[in-house]
Image 1: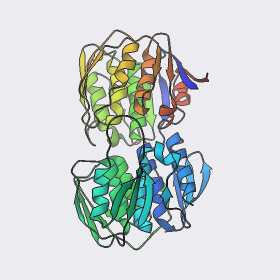
Image 2: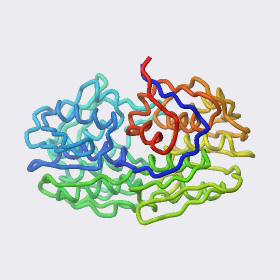
Image 3: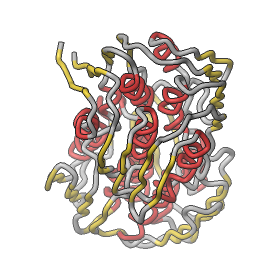
Image 4: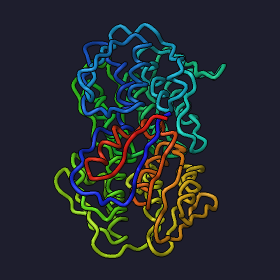
Length: 419
């Protein structure tokens, strides 16, 4: 079993390069199936376990997948011959539901097993199904799988009952070849929603309005292969920004889109840190004292739910009282118990974490209970006195490429061990 071992107390200094966005890549790769002609060459893909999982699923469906380098894939979906996405990789990965929309729009049928993912709360796919049915598909859930069929797909006006990134992307994908113009309202505006729309358009789709409240998808006859580069990862960037503040360091986070980070930058500045924006970078430093803040997660452009756990680690050693209110998921404070093992003072009441800043954390054996909780444990270990050991780091590997290497280049004492 692998674990991360951190000897805390090192000040992070230097520059770190952010890789492609996990949340964009895990939708773009399934969407490549729609290309009935040509090859998709996609670069700036993060070298993470979720991407490796998707590669295996694509291969199982009959795609030809070539790895050009660690961050570039060539996908030829011309001869897809299997419409049953029912493997262990599908079951273990939440984003595998994007294969439903992609297979539906190209082949008008699919069977995809219900996916898993991090245990952060109930994540139904009812809004996905609502959208597919509005386009003319029949959906049955049987023996743990979604079975979907359509004689034809026709455009519809669809208003989502809740703002859902997954449903927005999945129905947008499904509508690309539907007859007429589909109108999606109350949609998610996250950067990766826009990135998937841009990828679809590069393949020949006609998607307009991504990043606003209404997306319009005019159906086209076919999509073809293209060259595309995934946007930088907003969440990885935010994690390194928080780590810089946590260690009172001086870190330049490169290959980012600063606008995507504005909600994170604003909170760090409110705490007393300094954030300097460049064209494609942000520099984070700390000189004076930090103070507690209140954080409430919200859909983009609000504070990202995927960053609140690393933020909790930082706030655990900031003087005063801080509150983190989680408005997206109902079970996303599992990391609080692990931080408390290290000396933090965090109480969870419903969806709110009440944090009383302590003087310092102390190294301990802790668990990465999910992907972003794992990042929180890494930040806690960087701040703590003594040695921290983090187990179940397979969660971390799902979303952070070579995390120990990147932190070590900034001066951290961190290593991966097998025991």
